[in-house]
Amino acid sequence: AFVCVAGLSLLGACTLGASVATTDRRPRCSVFQLALGAAMCAWYSVLSAKCVSGLHFTSWHHGHDQLSVWQPWAVLVVFVAAAASNLHLLNLALAAGEGVTVMPVYE
Image (cartoon, rainbow, N blue to C red; front, side):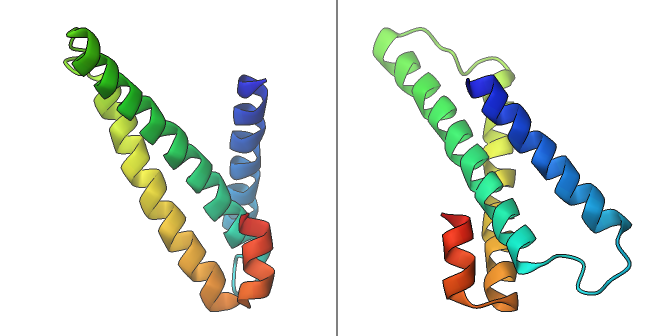
């Protein structure tokens, strides 16, 4: 189930990105697209933060260092990038539209 939701979310993000890249209208993104992109970034930032914190806890609790390889650090970079993108897209959506239309899409 998780792989299906993650795949659909990435497919939606790619579709939104392609529509933004190929449009000629200004502004390129609607409020709905910005809020939806912010919600997707929020989902991935929370997921990656949970992964890194779980690895850190099990390293501390069991004494087996799981942070000495590159993969947890790559997930940490994904977390920072997704959190920064979430904040940026949500600010753009709130600047372009009303809070009562942005927040229901974001939630």
